[in-house]
Length: 116
Figure: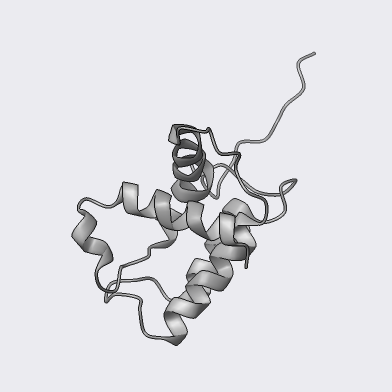
């Protein structure tokens, strides 16, 4: 786990919650939020810092470790998706940069047809 990546994850997550008090106890994690966090919230959070913090490497791997930790210590709130679904979302949205997909893309994609 990388300290800078964890700070960006927690900071971006705190900014995306409706109230700071939501961080006092267990928080709910939903697979649909993973894409938004990895593709937008973290980049925005890093860009809004006064020193314009660069987006850290290994964010997906750090998020995977962090969610495993939260699950192991029963710190995921009721209503959270199962950890297996969260891990799948991390792989889909933030895994290998060559294979990751944008959160706006669905599972179904139209075929690409060359222009003649």
